[in-house]
Image 1 (tube, rainbow, N blue to C red):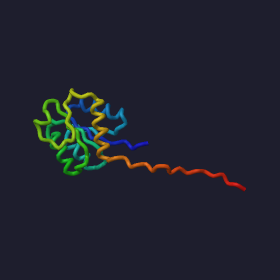
Image 2 (tube, rainbow, N blue to C red):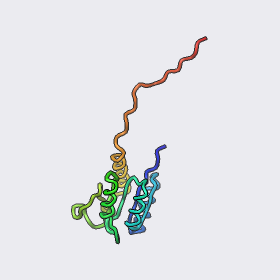
Image 3 (spheres, helix red, strand yellow):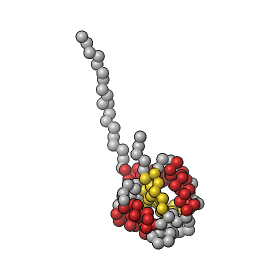
Image 4 (cartoon, rainbow, N blue to C red):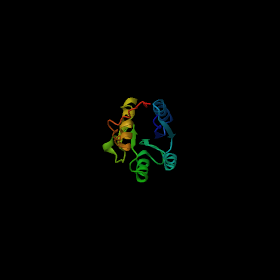
Length: 140
């Protein structure tokens, strides 16, 4: 059985955060959810986070600032930035993926997460070919 991946979710909208957490947990991910960027960064520093999903506009440390700090600490950690109003070309961000709230289905989010985690992990190692062990019966 594969180990569960841990996703750090950050959104100051509790309803959005709760919905995202349920979607991810029902698909087998562990979710660390926070409503403030500062708290989320503290959790990230503890380690064990495989991917970050952050809302763009939050009080204090907002999504782009949080992702920038995370990328400074761990450049290979994939990050998804979600916004209700701003388009990616309107805002500079270090996020790997940008999604607009209400414009994507949960299946789209899950597929983006799957692809980002595969990229982080790298390609699967090739399996050895034809290495079968044959069993011989002992002859007396």
